[in-house]
Each structure stands twice: as C-alpha cells, then as structure tokens.
Length: 199
Image (tube, rainbow, N blue to C red; front, side, top):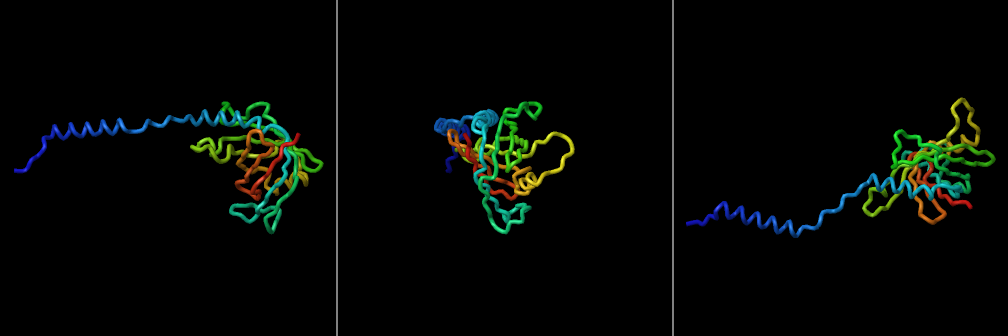
C-alpha cells in the first residue's frame, strides 16, 4: 500500500516553508527619488559652472563615427587656448512650467577680438541614475544667443560653428573645488574640451 500525504498537511508544510523564506529574505531596497536627486544635482552644479573659463584644449576628431568635418581636417587635432567662456545663470527660466531638474544659463564667448552672446540649458546625465553615481553629471545644448532679427555671420563665428562648438550637444563633468571642467562632444567634430577656470 502506497502512502499518500493528506492535502491539508502538504499545504500546511508549504505555508511554513514560505514563512521561513520570507523571514530570511533581505530587507527591501529603499526607493530612490530620481527627480529629487536630479534637482539636487542641478543645484549643486550651478556654483561649479558659473564663472569665466578658458577653453584650454579643444580636441577635434574629424574621422570618428557621425562626425561632421567642416574644417576639412585630415587627422585628429588639438586647438590650444581657443576662447574664453563666461557663464551666468539665465535671468529668467526658458521653460514653462519651471522644472527643477533643468537649468538655463547665459553668457559670452570671447574669440580673438570678438565677443558673442551664448546660451545653454542642462539636463540630468547618467550620474543621477547610476547606483555608484558615476558618469557625466549633465548634458547641455550650446548655441549662440543673438537678438531676434537678420544678421550676417562674421568669419570668427563661422569658424566656431565649423569647429563644432556651436549648436552641439555635450556631456559635462566637473569636480567640486577643482578649477577644471570637461565637455565631451556627442555629434560633431569636437571630441573633448578641457576648461580651466579663470580668476
């Protein structure tokens, strides 16, 4: 005669085993508020960005994937002490409604004897979502900020555009307390810009 355990006993044993496993399970991981983390990063980033910066080295890689080579460079090139960039917070937000996860900046770009108005906005980078909080802090779209109306481009601004600096998306990294900053170009000829803060 074959012994068959009663269904009631089997269910009771399964419930006891499940209870034991639940008691041994690690505590649930805390939920991360990524919106709050992104907003805090934008707040922390502002004093690190504001100021005057020298474009100490602009590394251009014209032959990489998806690169635009408007300067007709034949090889990777590095331009030294290209320009001075002054960054200030935008006088008023360019987004409606205002979102604390994004920030707007204005400024000027001094190249040779010319000074041009510029603007960019920042949004959260991979560091916000990384468990180790590594990677670029933010992305930005950099462009001229001329008043509305018709104008004829000057040779200097045309060079800056052909270089890949203008109308380009960059990732950015800074280190609190350090006088350096790095932008990495994502679409055009610029591979990386190394900045040095000016007194």
